[in-house]
Amino acid sequence: MSVILVVCVLGVALAAHEITYKGTVLATETVKGKTTIRVSVINEKTRKPAPMTFSIDKETKILRGDTLMTYAEARIQKDEKVAVTIDHDFDESYAFVIRLDEKR
Image 1 (cartoon, one colour):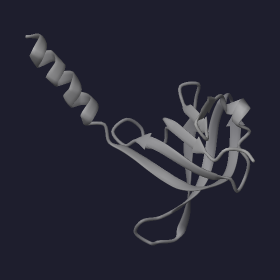
Image 2 (cartoon, helix red, strand yellow):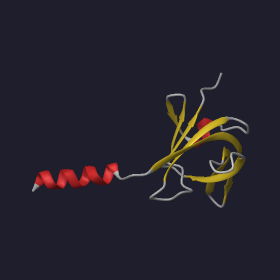
Image 3 (tube, rainbow, N blue to C red):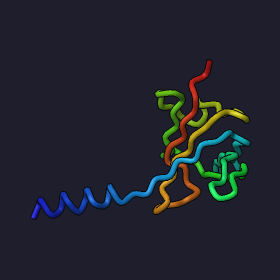
Image 4 (cartoon, rainbow, N blue to C red):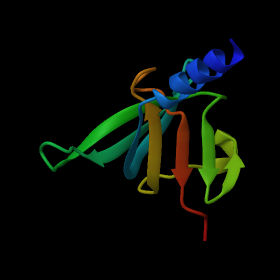
């Protein structure tokens, strides 16, 4: 019985459909307590830049280099390179992970 449960749990974990969008930051904004990041990414079909907006909350992992930090500590700036990971099966606009280059 426990073997079947472990296989089912692992199957669910493997079914996650994560997608990472790479681009540059257009803006960050907090309105009515909700924070978003707008990113210019290359559309795979048209091969042209297109803006995408992702929501951020306290559960979003923000990494600058390999250092985990809060949104406030990250001090995300316009035109900064960014990689945003979402779970296509959960919410296509929610950022699970935001990766930024280390500050120089």
